Amino acid sequence: MKKHLGFLILLFLAIGCSRSDIMYRFADTMAVSKTDDYFDLSSAQKKELKKDIQTDLEKMRKELLPQVAKSLRSVETQVGKGPLPEDFVADHVESAQTYFKKGTHYFSDTAVKLTASLDSTQISHFAKKVRKDIEKRQDPDEANKELNKRYRRSLELWIGGLSKDQKESLKKFQSSHPYPFHLQAQSREYVLQKFLESSKDPQTMKNFVQQFTSDYESVRQPAYDQALQSYQKDFQKFLTGPFWSSLSTVQKEVFKKNLLTRAEELEKLSQRP
Image 1 (cartoon, rainbow, N blue to C red):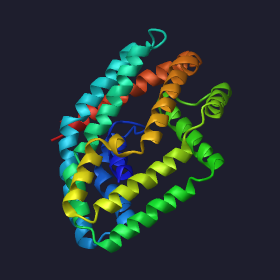
Image 2 (image 1 turned 120 degrees about the horizontal axis):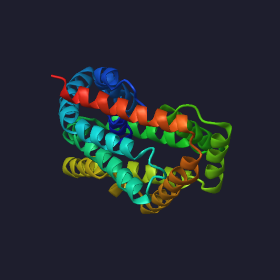
Image 3 (image 1 turned 90 degrees about the horizontal axis):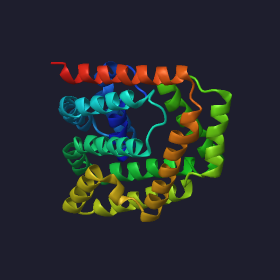
Image 4 (image 1 turned 180 degrees about the vertical axis):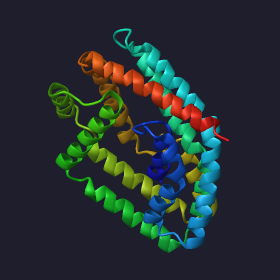
């Protein structure tokens, strides 16, 4: 479930999106399509879901996007002043996580409403799809390749093309700091089981979905949550330390330009009638 909520939030927090207005225009359609793929929704459910998501998006557009734009502008003012202070980076990483959580909360009522409308066949369909996703990520080599592609794609969207040395340093980081894929798979199954168990009682399922959309970290398996937090701290140190030091003047200028451009796009989008 978080995958589909997260899909929406990432679209509008300017993470890898240089045309937020276009993404916003089609977000409801894409979100319904992805959700339908996992739950095999009826026509009536898809129609109602699209209407509800449009309402949620409008509220998020006006309330959350200006906050994100302000944060992006704050980062831009720091770029070019030398190394990024650890406390500055930590604050903005925490802010990004806060924005993500705020974003998912906008869709809480919609998620509760949708899950309440699901029948047992749709819930079983969801479980099969999730377990199929988990199975696809069982090969650590393939999972690492995909993760490396995501990292490179995200970095290049912000700073432009990476040098050969930068690509190698990213690979070395991944080699010396393995992502906890095994624990991630266990946690996904753990969360899925909690959802399936909650689906046996309407109120229990409502409580679970509300908790999930307000604080998705709280429903993870504790071992994975701890391992993930440790990994994220190490990755943050890598990005703000050796990787940041390797950036060229051109890459920093591209980064500053992209920060301002995306901040302006989000501001314009939030102010649109």
